Image (cartoon, rainbow, N blue to C red; front, side):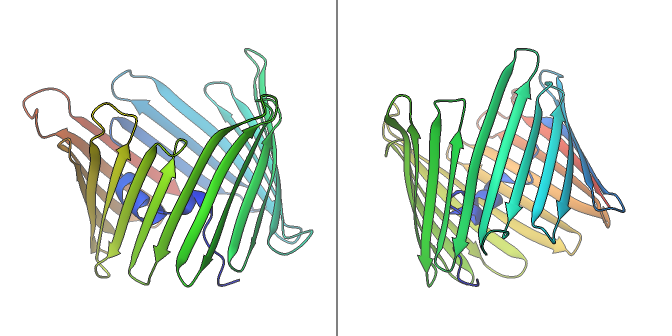
Amino acid sequence: MANVPVAYSDVGKSVNDLLGKDYPTGAVKLEVKTTAANGVTFTVNGAKDNKSGGIAGELKTKWADKAKGLTVTESWTTGNVLSASVELQDTITSGLKLSLDAALLPAIGQRNAKVGYEYKQDYIYTRASLDLFKGPTLFSDAVVGSDGFLVGGEVAYDIHEAKVTKSNVAFGYTAKDYALALTASNAFSLYSAAYYHRVSADVEAGAKATWDSKAEGSAVGLEVGSKYVLDRDSFVKAKINNGGILGLGYTQTLRPGVKLTLAGSFDTARLQENVHKLGVSFTLEN
């Protein structure tokens, strides 16, 4: 299925990753991922907020039976949220994945459960899920694509209230070395346009403009960024928006499976004030 388009949430992913990933500002983060001999994956995530000093963490286990297309994921957070996910891939028919996601907050008895599916074939990628306890609410999205062009839509429908609670659309085009994306969300009140360009094997660049028609003044927000690969083990990233917020990041692979990321966010209009944010992320994986 070489012509399968991306999922709706991944329209514009290249520029979103360029501007959003590898900037762990305002926190100290640690991720440890190990895989047992039987294939079970254990992941521990932790983050300390530099401002509040609060620490949040998560322990996650994942087991997969590739022959049967079965994947089971369980997690437990420091907020005492227990969650589990069961996925069945390509068992009933090729390209179809069924899923069941459940979560429980024992302290207050809050629970949540979703059932859903994903189906992808050449030229189409569609998903739907039903939130059984909130509404219940039906979520659905679909993307069709051909020759690099993408058209997609997303909708949420509250069954109890009998009303649409979310409606978004997206358009995109992906070529060998660049990509474009246009989206309209929040009931067609928030618009964005994004551009990504792989300039060379070592340089990436991108920009994203956002306009909220309901915001006071209705000014357009603009953010531009770039990534430069220093060598096979390290790269730097930089971005700045029209508010003068400058982001800088440096990622270094110390050895196979060990990665360190340093980042900062600086308000260039208030350089003498204590408003800047620093952060670090350390990842271990075997």
